[in-house]
Length: 272
Image (cartoon, rainbow, N blue to C red; front, side):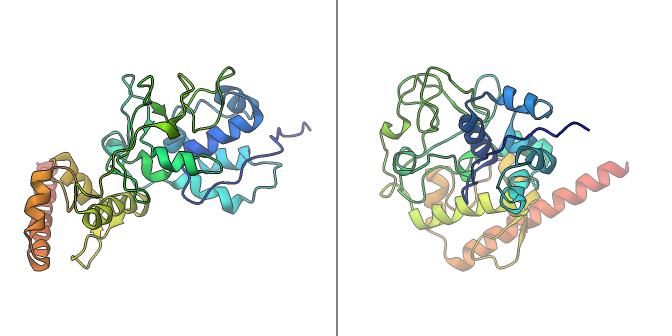
């Protein structure tokens, strides 16, 4: 009986690291492309690790290594609650060819001992870094290249995620745009964290509303360009700033009633 292939070593996942980031670091550790790694481990093509990586893939990739399965199992479930039809709506796919992309905080990458991509950076609503209060970058500051979810391993450029895969520019050197004075930071932070938490848990909380709100409701609002508290347009934020806590609660309740009516009409249309 032939012995199953093993990579022997694999990187430890970082607590808020994305699947694409971990898989890229795995490829870098072995100085092989994603295609080479997948072929060696008899895994079919994986175009977007954040979406395509399964529990079986993870089990195969860590086979024979010292990495406990419990440490890497969550990588296969990151965005499992997002309906397939909504993935391109809420996850970044900004490259011209439609492939998955990331935003990044240059200061985070500059300070990381081991540069890595955060889960939140893939979500389109994550607009600024909650640690450094700077606007997220979406392109390389030097060549305007994208930070792709399935990054091609380079044999001529540095392999760290801190460097652009296209031109090798240090992404940690990108200009920073401070946002601490341009918006209600506390409100905006709570909002973008609520969006990310919703996509990871399948529901979300939005103070001052106490009950859990469904992920379907969040996606419904996003499809109709209805920003929730602290997100998107300055005009919307100005309106929200003028609302008291009870008024915000009533505003959310009205939105949710609209959503429920939409669901009822959809159900009735399906019957006819």
